[in-house]
Length: 373
Image 1 (spheres, helix red, strand yellow):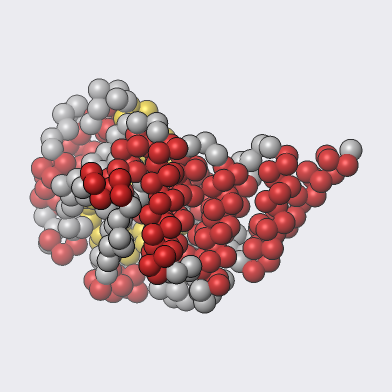
Image 2 (tube, rainbow, N blue to C red; image 1 turned 135 degrees about the vertical axis):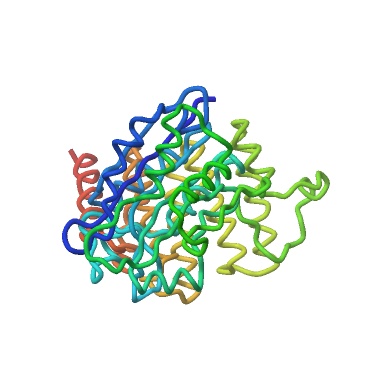
């Protein structure tokens, strides 16, 4: 099956730039696409110094939905949002003060990759840090999520002021330019060895042995009959159904587990919300943006009703996803039916992007005008 390669090189413009991320793109571009992907054929999507988090999210989401192997090469710098203590990939307009609004939240990466088949996704990163984010990473290292092979390095704060070179990624690209791609762990070790750097700066190479594609939720609830009889992890069974195109079966399994979680833990519990989120993602995979939007609206409402703050990362992510899916609905009746709930949510949860409420109101008014006309 053809592979997909996503190249993301991002760094702030101006004095906040810690790494000259885009300088490695010509070296990577000289590598045959199939070598970058590790597949007989491959397509490449490149993002050089992107400005907008939503642009990165759109490209990442599209890449995550491809059926074949996916390899993401990520070059840039990470910064800590001081308010919520969340790590972000800095983009062109990011500053220390605006990282929450102009950076790309790291947890968006894990969210978008979570439904991909285990073993089909690789993230290779060359990242630089300031002192605050370096300290946060020593306490909680980066992760790309279950089922994702994760290699690379995180460089500590540099002593010099000039932007550093993405030396790890350049070394890795130089190895790949021969047209031969060694096994990933070997490739990572060769690139790291050529730098002569200390091990603490390197990400712990992670090539998991086929864990479930959707994170399991501890502890287990009583299992519905079919998964219990088969002995399969429900997440693995759902992923297998999606891969085979049996979207109705996948949705039914998720709904069954959601009902079990609801009986055991009640509405608003993390277990119930988890399965709501799975159903929302499954509707998106099935090409039903209206149902996915409706479910994400319910997720946001459940989190708010459970006491989570409107500016918490989980609530904002649910609102952003609902809005993203609503924008992709083409059925006027569905747009008008879901629009008021989205506008009401945006009043409480505007999110990181300015003007989300006004955009939702404007689109809803346009569709109401069309109906009157």
